[in-house]
Image 1 (cartoon, rainbow, N blue to C red):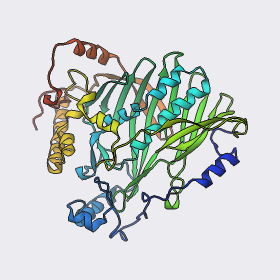
Image 2: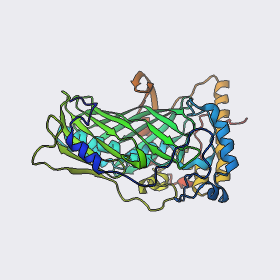
Image 3: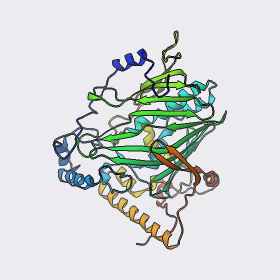
Image 4: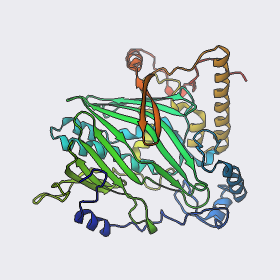
Length: 453
C-alpha cells in the first residue's frame, strides 16, 4: 500500500466517512465575480451572523468600503499578495504572525510523550497529533499582523517550554522560531506564499519544521497542507486546509501520511482527517482518524490497513475547553500568548506584545490601531533608508541564515538556524535585578535609532 493513498485500505475509512457529516453554518455560498454578493453573510468578531446591511449599520464593512476594496484588489488576482497590499485593521486580530507560531506549543506534552515512548510507531502518532492540534486555532478567519523586521516574540516556561521567534526578512516575509524543553527542540523557518484568487486566497506554507527528540536524537520533519481562505470580501469567511500532511522520521524512515478532507457541499467532510503511520518499508502499522477541530484517535492495523482483531480505537488528543462567544475565537492558550503572564523577566523591547497597533486593536480602538500601524510601517521604511545610507544590511539577532536551501512542494526555502545567543541573553536577564514592568517598555525592534523621514 502506498503511503500517499491512505484510503486504499477500504472498508474502515469508507464506513467512517459515510457516517460522519457536519451540517453547521460555517459553509455558505461562495461568490465569484462582481455580482450576486448583496446580503450575504460577513464574518463578525462578536460571533454573530448578521447580513451585510446589518453589519454596515454597526459601522463594519460598509457597502461602499467593501466595493472600493474589491475594486482595488481586482488587479492582484493571481498574484502573491503576502506583502504588496496594505490591509485595513478591520480584518486583523490583535496578534502577530510571530505569536501565532507559538500556538503550536499548546499541546507540547504530545512531543514529551513522543520522546518518552519506546514504540517507534506510537512516537509518530504522538508527534503527528501534536502537528494537527494547532489547526483548531488556525481556522480563525482574522489576519494576524505582519511582524516588523527585527520584531520578536518570547514565551517563558509554559509547561516547561521556552519559545523565541524573530522576523528575519521583510521581502520576502520570513520568520524563524525555536522552542525547547527537556524532551525536545523545535525549529522552524517560515516563508508564506499566497495566491489571490478574487474572493479567496491560497496560502502555501513554504517552510521547514524540524523537531528533535532528545532521548534518542530522532529528527522529525513536517510538511503541512496548504490553507484556503474562502469569501475574503463577500460572504462569510471560512478556512479549510485540504490535502496531505506528511511527517517523516529522518532518522529511521518511518512516516505518517494524513489526509485532510476538503469541505464538501453543506459542510460534509470538513474537519475530517485520516491516514496511517508507515514503517520505512511503507507498510501501514497504525491507522489514525479524527477531526482536527475535536480529537484524534489511533488503532493498530494490518498490512492492508484494516484494524487488527482484538484492538480498539483509542483517543490520543482531544481539544481543550475553549471560551464561549470569544470576540476573536481565541482559545484560552491564545489569550495566554497575548498576555504578559507568559512573558519572561526583562522582556525584549522588540516583543510583539508591545506593538501599539496590536494593543490598540485589543482595546477595541480601530482608528488608533490603523494610525499606529501606518506609523510603524513608515518607521520600518525609515530604518531601511538608514541602513542603506550606512551601507549596512539587516542581520537577525537570534537566528543566522545558513547556506542550506531546502526544496518544498511550493518552492525553495532559505533556512535560518537558532544561534544560541538568546539563551545567553535570557540567562543574564533572568539573573539581573531589573524588575521593570514589561507593560511600560516602548516597542522598539529597530537596529538603528535614527527613524527620521
